[in-house]
Image (cartoon, rainbow, N blue to C red):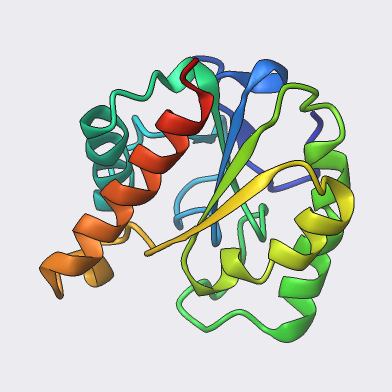
Length: 163
């Protein structure tokens, strides 16, 4: 799974091409470009919320691959995504999911990731999809049901891949 200029890399501690669950977020967090990973170990509230939800579900990170709908770092990242940026990000999904031969589920976190549902269904109709709240602290901390919704999505995914 390759990456374009300014695109963080996959976390080697996750499942990579052997992943059974795709966890799709919106965009990489702002920060320096050098040696960036999309990871639940990043020092952000979003990563902490993801990690907590996965641990609560008993989901081994080697069974997931974490990625972003718009996978590259953006200049002016405080501004909302444009339709063109989202469309460009969605166009990269085929290259993302094609090598994931064991993929069984996708947890789509937030509004932008939910926009990937039609594309993922077209590319991989056998993959089950679950819409989940975005794990950012700004959203998760505003209402207890958001955190519960995120945890429920990971519990669903864990149950789906557990024999």
